[in-house]
Length: 351
Image (tube, rainbow, N blue to C red; front, side, top):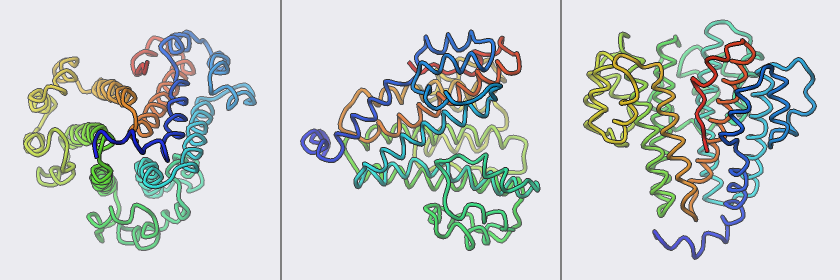
């Protein structure tokens, strides 16, 4: 019951909520980012990070450093923290934490299937997979020729199995089909996660509904923009939108018929939370849209920590840490390629 979580939450969730709030205090601040943006080499970045919680993960790395090494080690820290929380969690928090990784599983499946289609080495692809989205039979994905085989040989034993029911076809896998598969899986995953959070009730349902609705709306906008000028029909496009969120259902009807970025903008400006995002972009511009969405998401994730006795803080922390790793990757790439003038283009400050 909403408002009564304080009575029983701490029996099972109190320790882990304290842990995750402690982890959150270790996120990089604006001062850290300003120092990192001044770095001249990747070794300078390593030296600055040695004073943060990433220090123990990078201390034994020899020079010369590579961007991939920095990202890999920072991701390893996130994985270690996630595994620690999962080990300590009891139901329903353990299921909630598992839901957080399903998005990475979908990305890994798509990465391996796409890589195999372009005849890339499976071992090389496995190294690029996100460690939070790994499962036992992931390497077997390389043998599948179509969706049906993909499901029957591999995915039937994974948590993604229920999400595949909508996209099992006998069509051969090609780039277009794989992208449709990714978005269909994501739609099913977000709707399932949304229903699970609604069942939990209380503050978790309230805050997670807002965060997942934002994610669903962002995906709807990205699907629309990416499918402009392709052979995807309006009905196909509409089927890829999630059946919840601020844009559901009338915004989806408008997005389905958009034929350029300015029409997308006109449809989105009717919704006050998204009006502020699109007002920062000039007409016809979509390059900075991702950053504007990330900034809005970070704002919402930080607000999740303002309330107590709910599970949304775990989701928010994982997302904020992933954003931090994206920031570090961008800064490292700019430094490595001597493009320091562009270093602020994609950095999203968290605190």
